[in-house]
Each structure stands twice: as structure tokens, then as C-alpha cells.
Image (cartoon, rainbow, N blue to C red; front, side, top):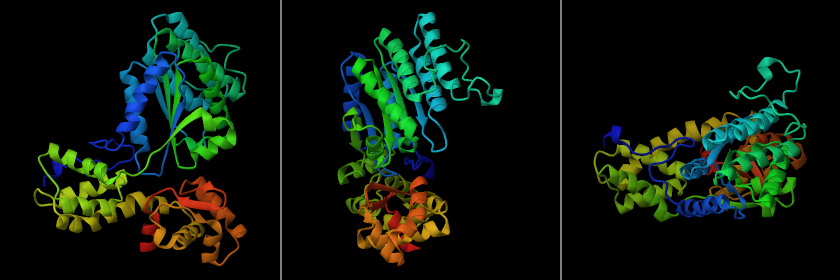
Length: 396
């Protein structure tokens, strides 16, 4: 098969040629956009799932839908070592520019508030290199979104940005990836702002994406977050959609898969979108001709697994210290044959495998949680954030 015509796209956040299995979410979001723009009540949206299921891809697709509707949009990625003010300011600056409000005075007022919100983090005596410089020419507003209380300031900022969008009969969407990495104060402020905006009916929504424990993070911050957001679990593809993700792009290149080959591909990938693309790319390059057969899959599988072991699994494993790696291996052993069922295991079982007390393993566990290699969806239990990670560890 011609590698130049290879249609598959394994990459972090890279949209696959066929966005299979997400039609329901895309249709539902179109309804949300129309309702919000018309002043109808709608909740902000939170996408959750393991790494490699396509949360970022779907987040980008939803943003594209908002852009096509004429909305102002901005995207940011949360980081554990960064506060919310600056990246959110950049995202909202882009959203205001996309709205292109015809009345300069109103637009300049909002930009001034936006600048005040961003610069409040650095403080009035900050050095030039520490000051936010987004290319806003208007001076920072005074007495609006500059109190220093992130919760108050964010409510005021989103109120002004939402009013600008409402004038045009449009909306503003903030698309926030890796949402679980927000600091406690920023999570609380974002929840409070979404709560306030939803009560006023302004056309502003937040679409967040994060790991499976994100709902617990939000709930711990504000009890009403359980009702504030619409939660959607993004999971692996079923057999029909996984087949579609492979056959539709191949069909565009006048190639096909045999039924046995598709069965073998699903067995190997488990229906996880990233793995579907990774195996698809390798199998295409290995196969001599169309149709792609089960023998081609068998030949390509070791190469695909080697690439995943280096890029997808290995890069994450290398971030762990020797003590943390020992903990990860113990998790895989504690899970046993269920390691690829993406289930959680009791922390007590991990301690038993290592022959240590659970309390003595707290530092390693907490460090792995911060690095995003594991997560805890419920007290006393942990799970890998990456599908098939346990299988990778057991093979080493």
C-alpha cells in the first residue's frame, strides 16, 4: 500500500479522517448553541474520559461548530503550575475579536475590563516581562474585574463579554482542556461564574474536558456543580464505529479490509480511538495490497505495539521515578487479568502486592496523581489514566 496515501492520523489531539462514534455529541451541541444564542437556559458541558479516547479531538470539533455559528470562541489548556487568569484572558481576547462587535466603544470597554482582569495577577508594580501583553491598545479599566478575588473578577468579566455577544444575537464559548489540572481557587471561581451566568441568561458557556475524576474535582469545589454542568463520558468505540473509523478513510483511497481483519483490529485496539489510528497507520504501511487481511494485521501488530510502547506508554512511564514505577507495576499485578478492563483497584491491594503498609505508599501515589498517570474516582481506589497501560507494564 502506498504510504503517501495512508489516511490514518495517530496524534495527540489530531482529528482523525473519520470522527466515528461522536455523532450524538455533535448533534446535541448544535441544539445547545442555538438555545444559548436565543437566551434559553442551558448548562455548560464537561467531557470526561481516559487518555486516548478523543476528548481533545471532540473539544476541537465542538469549537468548530461554534465558530460556524458565528460565535466568539477561545481555547486554553489548564496546567498545574499556572493560574487561570492569563490563559483565560488570551482565550477571551480571541473570542472578543471573533465577535467583531460593530460599536467600537462597547468593544473597547470589554477589552479594557479584560486587560484589567489579566494584569491583576501581576500587580501594579510588576516588571514589564511579567505584565500581560495581548495586543490590546485600550487602557485597563478600573473598578471592574480587578478586585484580586478571582471569583468576583471572573463573574464580572464573563458578564461583560456575554453582554457583548448578546448584543449581536450570538454567544461566547470557552473551551478548556485538561480541566482537572486547574487549581482549587480557579475551579471554585469557574464554577461560581458559570452558576452566575446561567442565572442571568447571558450567552456564555464553558466546555471542559478532563480525566474521569473531573466530576469529583468540581463537586469538591462547589456542591451545586453536579447540577451546573452536563457531564458526558467519552469512551471507546463500539465495534461498528471502530470499523467505520477504519473503513471510511480506506474507502476514500479505494482500499478495503476483510471482515477477519476488522475483527483482529478490534481485538488489538479495544476500540480506543488513538489505538485505532495507530494500528490503522501501521497496518496500511505493512499491507502489500487491498484488501487488508488478518495476516497483514498479524504482521503489523508487533510494530504498532513497539511504537505505542515508546511514544504512548513509554513517554509516560519515563516520567515516573523508580519508586513510582514500582507502584505502577504493583497496580498492574493487583488488577490481574482485569487490567485492561479499565477498572480501578483498591489501594490496599497495591500495598499487599508490595508487602508494605498503605500509608507508606502515599507519597508515591500522590505524586503519580499529580503527574496524571493514575486517578482516583472514589476513596481508596485508583486506576490508570491510560487504557492498556497495565498490559504494557505486565509485558515489561
